[in-house]
Length: 617
Image (tube, rainbow, N blue to C red; front, side):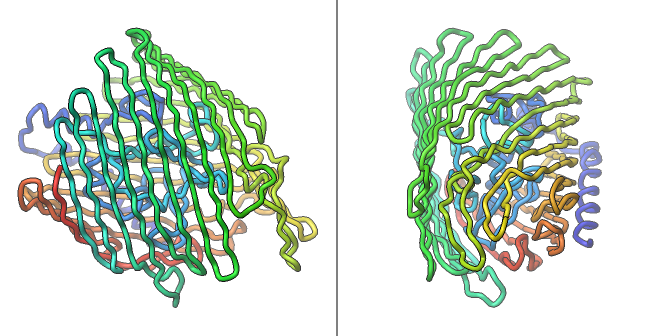
């Protein structure tokens, strides 16, 4: 209760203070600085509509975490960056590489999509993405789009889409950047890279290494370590004709100790694309990509190897018609599974066609999209969305949308081999499963000003045919039996005044089971209230900042009998530009040394301090 009151009080104070800060006297700024501030507060977003749109033009609930934000916060994990953002909830089985889940608007980890530079990364066996194996230093920015995007991205985009972008090439160069540091729990972090452009060719190369002795994940346990080595290569060339070709490769590899064993992992995306301006109005882009999720697990009485690979060929066409834009294309993908488990089926393919219209009848805007998927394993699905926007004036935009999406049953859901647990019965997959389907309605309004913004959204998502485990006479298998309803309200705001940068978010959600024995109960491990406030100040060569993240209680079980208390986290940071291109940074995570958990009996790290020195831009 105290955490909840703190979240409401602190979040409300921060939101109320934003317009007052805007009205306060500030030192004169150049027109260029004001334009840059406005761009950061109303950034360009590509994930929401498959085309560049400013945040207020997307007709969506979006959050952009830009390069400056990532540099200031310098998190040790991607999940730390996402925790407490509007509509985002995170659970983990400990810190530093331990299994984590990201929930958007109360939906499951496997009901959301993770993209890296447009390439989807997930486990085809488990269904969701392994967020905990990605080093945030390999990325330049992140876009969080909340709401269904099945008509644009296909399966699993029920709660939304998170896209991580690798570093773009800089003008001229090569421009080097190097960072080294460490801190608590014998943690060491190193990264290096360089980027530049010359004669139409842009390039960016980077590598990073993270290692730590870790902390116990259970009370009285031993430290559980983690290490991650990542590498990135990105090259593109633009010809005089305007045609462009490019390649991307990102690979993360390491090991992770957990309670009862150890695992080695590989997370990898690679792609090659060609973009051709067919006419002045028509651009065609062809992309061939591959994503890999590999996990080798070793325990005293059990070992497994699970490797999944997804290959995708995507053809996308963009047609500009004055103020309007039409996007259409096709996509073919194939999932393959190999390893120690003997699945009855080890591959499946999916063929899809899609189209979207982005229509501007100022002050009205219309966005409509439709997609058809035909999957070898679970059949045909049609998804669509319609969003309407109306500019009340130059600063305020109303939006309303309705959209459908679906979650594909994973290989584990469909084909998990028969296992006999003796007295505990047996378990096996169900090849007759249908995809989960959803319908979402959303209303929102955004205020966009020169120095600050605010955004308010309310939504409801109804999910049918939820996949759950059904047990009859001791024998268990997944089946389509459940229904769920997720509804909530999100309020976010941000400002940049003089040398101050502030961002605040409040989230209320009600993810509820709507069938079975647990009808009316909150879906397990979801917090219904959260707040986040980020404050940073530039002081000449110095910078100071902090983040306050508060989340309410959650339940570890579907019956809502095992209550996990809420918590508040305070993270502090300081930076020092001590020479041209040289800087030092100190971060203090969980400064109040709060003991907290998001999954029963799995502890997260206490107070931790890290220091690093950087060279470069």
